[in-house]
Length: 180
View 1 (cartoon, one colour):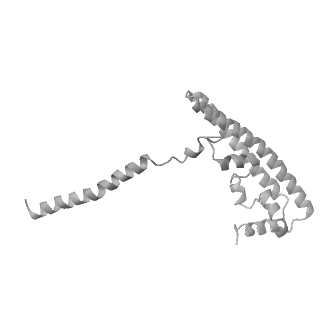
View 2 (tube, one colour):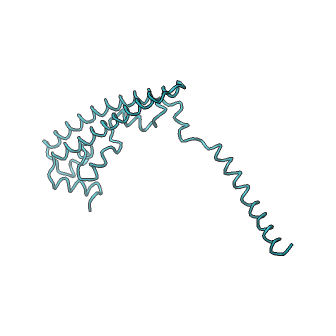
View 3 (cartoon, one colour):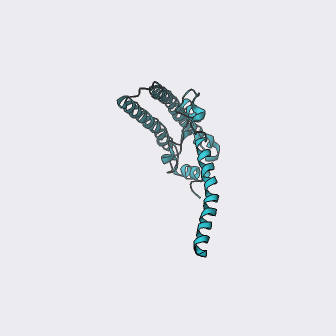
């Protein structure tokens, strides 16, 4: 055997001895890694995180109106938080409060309906007998309701923007860091 052949075999053995334990450790670690869903198994809604449940129950925005927010259509909650900085007059504040209250009430009701449907979807799978038709019907229903929830939040942004001057909108965008 030549010196080069011996060197290559030795190099291969050394490389394999370095890589093999790492591969075994990676496989062992992977098989014992906790699923990101494990903490929800005993939760009230196994299909949602506790934060998602809270946000749905409280009528929170959850980023659903980001398209409006980032394009100079402020939302009522943030407008009320910034009313002094924006110089909103009492009539504007009253109208925006009414928009916010209507949005929140409607969003909470829709959030509860979504929670019921999520519970039904989880129960469908927990039964061990989910049919493709039932699953499809439930997920389509959930998709429609989530779209309706998004529309509730986006419409509140549109309505709120109608209550502002262009200067207030520009100032809002600067305060929120969307414009410099």
